[in-house]
Figure 1 (tube, one colour):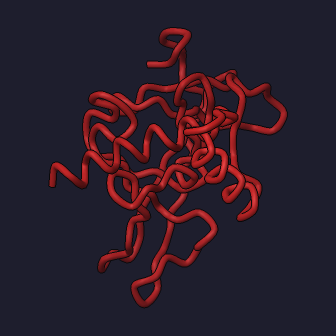
Figure 2 (tube, rainbow, N blue to C red; figure 1 turned 180 degrees about the vertical axis):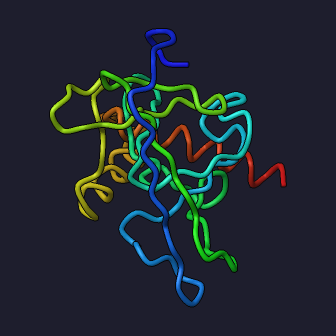
Figure 3 (cartoon, rainbow, N blue to C red; figure 1 turned 45 degrees about the vertical axis):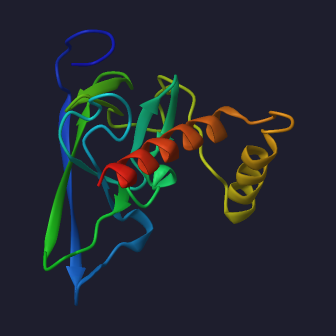
Length: 165
């Protein structure tokens, strides 16, 4: 199901992430394990594995799930004796949001199409540090940007997961 209702699937695209000696070969796009409920109440409604660069839709924005890793409810997935993981993308006539096990994920994005929502991402270590500083300073003056607020909210959910365990 997509935001705009049901539409025909244009293509299904798959790729395989391989591991060698217990490490994933493509370290730029590691698998990310999203625990049930990590993105919101019952979202996803079952554990979900995505690639780190695959955006999820949170609070009106697309954000690569790897940017949301918090070490508890959203974690990088270890190879753990696996030789490979298969990932699938669904291509529609236009870029859109799909309901994947109760989590909102983007359909396959092609550069020539217009994004269905703004994409937020960190541009490196300094942007992540600035984001953390804005969050710390928010107790005095809240100048957080949407990317900071989303990360803070999901990290707090992760802390609740850890306390409940």
